[in-house]
Length: 169
Length: 169
Figure 1 (cartoon, rainbow over the protein chains, first blue to last red):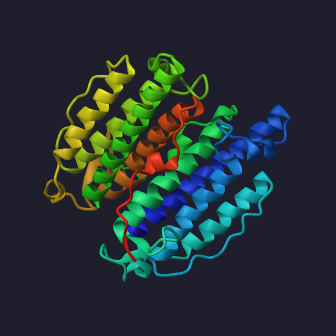
Figure 2 (cartoon, each protein chain N blue to C red; figure 1 turned 180 degrees about the vertical axis):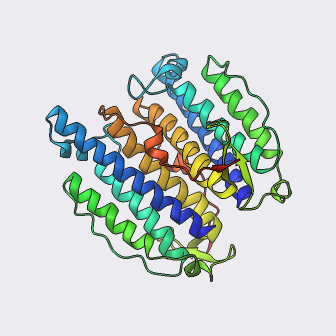
């Protein structure tokens, strides 16, 4: 399961890259600076677009790393432009793509993964993935999507979902 | 995996119920009709709050049903109030809670589940859950959250995530 979910995170991040590409094309057509999206928020005390992208990436990266028994690579929060954020996604994808199903072989549902906080606490691997990283990941990707969408970018849920692996049935 | 993810859907819907309770308390304090949220949209051509709740429930219900080899119960889209929508979530939860891990025993990653469209097409069980229902479910729950949040309801991501099963680490 761990590898399947991590692969789906990567797939969703690629869909997000496509959506960001559409936002760039839209900004060019409407003649505004696409970087204006970076600081947009749905409400004044919510995090801006920039943070939504960073946090989504970090949830995918940390789930992939800690479930496969590795330290995650450090990606600095130093992006200032839309293009920088695409670079952040690309770095995250390079890490996710470097991990194979084999790398999760030593993790079982009983494996406990330590959390950064509260001190001395952790989660069993299944909870770590399904109740912490999975909802967080989709929460931030969807919020990033909502910010672009409510800024007028012509995307729909099929962009968010991407191309499904249809088979005959 | 199927049962674990379906249980997480139920857990998230319970968190959504709590968030909706906070929206009702907030509307009472601010003296406006909480049902005003039902028709709110983040952008004019997006679906309103009401539809976000219905679709989130249907993705959880259909995933649980078809992965456990059952026909899903039919829940009519006839809600008009916030309280009706809480009833829709409660019906969905009653169905999700009726399904045990055993019920998924005959489904393997090679099982193909037919889609309502396109005709003659389906998805393998893992893709059905991870690339169709899981992202759809979180997409709609997060959008519902974003609508309440951007309407001023004082909730945060910890309400969305709920109480994690922390263990000593």
